[in-house]
Image 1 (cartoon, rainbow, N blue to C red):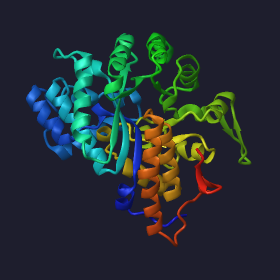
Image 2: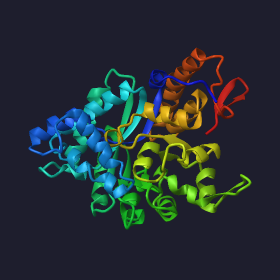
Image 3: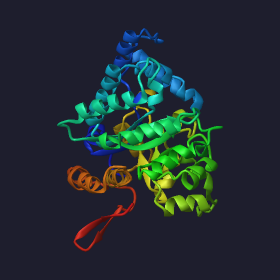
Image 4: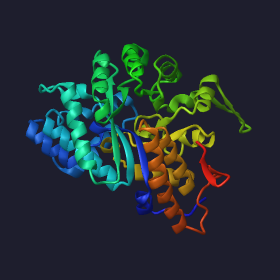
Length: 381
């Protein structure tokens, strides 16, 4: 077991975030101000009480219930000015948390109730990202999301493609999985694939293996949003031996990235506690695991606190966090040369400094994920 790592040290660690919803990460004070401007009634106008209300509302062990509080945040994102502000503050908060690369996702169809077009929504988000990231040590891309229970996915895919050169990095579908299989949106995914763009799909969160299989084998997902239910295809015998079914083996063999969100999964009832979350087993089996926040406001979480929770639950140390971070950066939809630059110039030096400051302690509870290869250091993921 490594020595205890201070929360402030974890905050300083360079981190990569692949699964974070813009409408799930607003500041409580901002929700209050924007709701007042929009004439939208909130359950409370005290920032601390509102944060507690959101978290209590999300932590009901059911994905459908978890999604209900979003009606208040999207009500605050119906004008260009409000969307730009939310996007700017998102980047500011991620920088303060030590995130050096982020892919933030948003469904533009949720922001058109007062007359904006989906294109105008995307453009406002991208302007906010650009303004806040300028001069700061972070790169931010937008994943344009379609709602899986709606019938606009092809239109939203076209919106994503129109802004590929302006900061959009990929396409996603989100919302309740039950009764809304990803194959229903095959036309949209085909459009994205034909344009040589990127696809990640919410799959294997509240629903099981069929959702994961469709996302990968029919819809062409490069990453799985959550993907936690892949454990349903893994058997652990009483003697500790482990057997992977064909789908789990495929996911591991192909190095399919899993955008795992432990705290959110506890909120939605996927796992009772962080310590019982399948991320522990999946990391031990060397799946391409990444760690994410999902919805920072709803779950009252930051990426640093996600790491701290995993440190407490599994004893993971700096080597583990570096492995997870490089996994995420390698799995991003950012151009390859820019990915390498962030790994070589920000992630590796950052963790080297943190590990040097904690010499004398056991930095990791597992075999380090870096192996020497001549004079080079090869990253194994």
